[in-house]
Length: 107
Image (tube, rainbow, N blue to C red; front, side, top):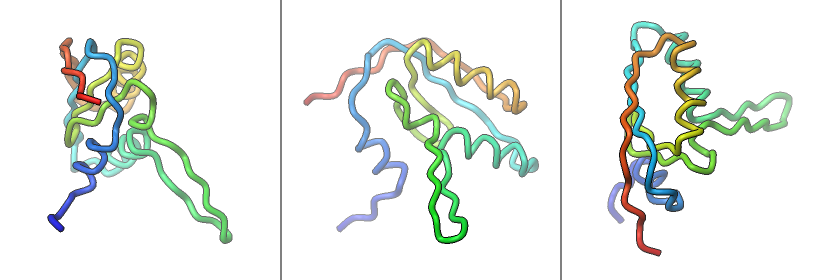
């Protein structure tokens, strides 16, 4: 079986979404671990284990209307693009938003 990185599995497992939207890409300052950590938790979520219990906090990419395209790149529908731009600005993350269309995948 060929190696299947988690980013490829994630992209393949997502359902098709509306074709009109935005691509948002960002560049995190790797020299700023607090910024990296905050953004990673916000985008991908996290799972915490405390006293034998597991607590799951879903990430932004799990929302309906978000499509993972690759490292630091998401396709989003219009309302979600605004919801992502705010925290990126608040975290001090350099980012860019581009209007685009994404072909709908065959069923």
